[in-house]
Length: 283
Ligand SMILES: Nc1ncnc2c1ncn2[C@@H]1O[C@H](COP(=O)(O)OP(=O)(O)OP(=O)(O)O)[C@@H](O)[C@H]1O
Ligand SMILES: O=P(O)(O)OC[C@H]1O[C@H](OP(=O)(O)OP(=O)(O)O)[C@H](O)[C@@H]1O
Ligand SMILES: [Mg+2]
Image 1 (cartoon, rainbow, N blue to C red):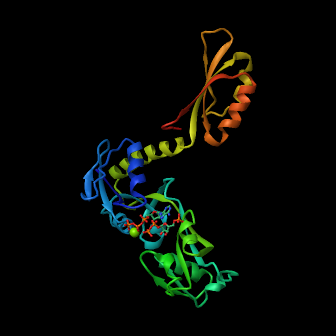
Image 2: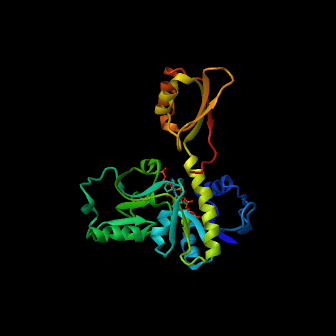
Image 3: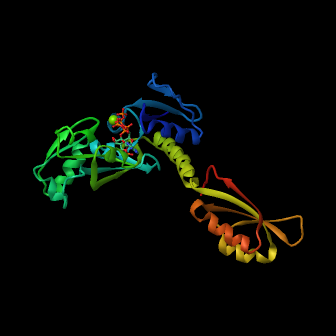
């Protein structure tokens, strides 16, 4: 049985559970019981602090884990990075008080920078030959300049709202992160097979995100025009209608192309257009 580590509570917890659920795997949401058996897949779930997930997976305490790439890079344990999971997107950036004049990374020479990501920051400074004082704090990093603890900060940014609320300006975007699936490098062949089953399900869910299933009726004589407009995994599906001279077309269209394609299809005579959500897509 495969063992997966997910965040016990916090930003990645809900979406990790949701991804497993979309993959047909039901896991307990209980925050008190820190290990539980999933239903729908031979899987045991460990609920951990996100900081501890890279080490748990590197040691083989868990076979796989869902965690932010930022924690993987910060902790530096050797794990296999299996796939991006399409949620928890954020960046780690350097920010300075908005009244500060900033003309480039040399600004940080000799400055004090507060962060919860000292290793990623140290690597960035070493690559640029910058000598700065890194102060590690666990949370509420954005408060550090205002209370005189630091000249700048290096922390997670998503909307940028926290920086603005604390009078800070983002000056360097250093590291881009999202939730990833990681694995223990030494998985045996049985566990590797189970992990492949899991990633197959995850991939089919991610592939279907932002895709719509579209059905419409069309005069048969316009079929060639419709095929030019519609993409398809191979080509659109065409079915005859009971009414002579008409057919039904089915295709999968990416959300961002949807309305432009629909307009062109209407122009060539498409009617009775149905747009359905797509749950899974297996290429
Ligand atoms: N504002 C944000 N937007 C998007 N993703 C974020 C944001 N903040 C954090 N993340 C991602 O979610 C992960 C978990 O964030 P969270 O704030 O829950 O961490 P934490 O407080 O360290 O939790 P834990 O108690 O598990 O140690 C981060 O490591 C990062 O990958
Ligand atoms: O750019 P924004 O959208 O404002 O997000 C950035 C904030 O989100 C995270 O904190 P979180 O809210 O998870 O609280 P925490 O500091 O307790 O981890 C992160 O540490 C930033 O402070
Ligand atoms: Mg943490």
